[in-house]
Image (cartoon, rainbow, N blue to C red; front, side):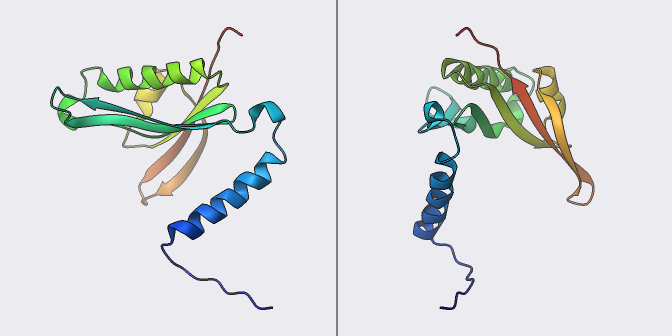
Length: 144
């Protein structure tokens, strides 16, 4: 049998490959963490439902990962980013996550996350030639 590599935008195949990885991982994770996956999307809206930002992430096993946290530039400095971050952190605590991880670029929000007790655990240089990519983590403490 021969195999080939193809490039395509195919949501069915994408889901299949992601499921293959999930099934492999389940074999290695403790039983009490299996099945712990939840998408978390919080939005900053006005009274008309217009979206001005949000935080998008997911709970996976014993952590919460933030994929996107964005607030409209007109609202920067008004505390909405902090409110979104604190809201998703509370969800992580309520779900007994051990840590939160997030990444940001050097021109984005590194000081913001550091001011909220996130610590750098890795970096990549030469991102977009002139920037750094920072990987951050916040260890959570909750009552058992």
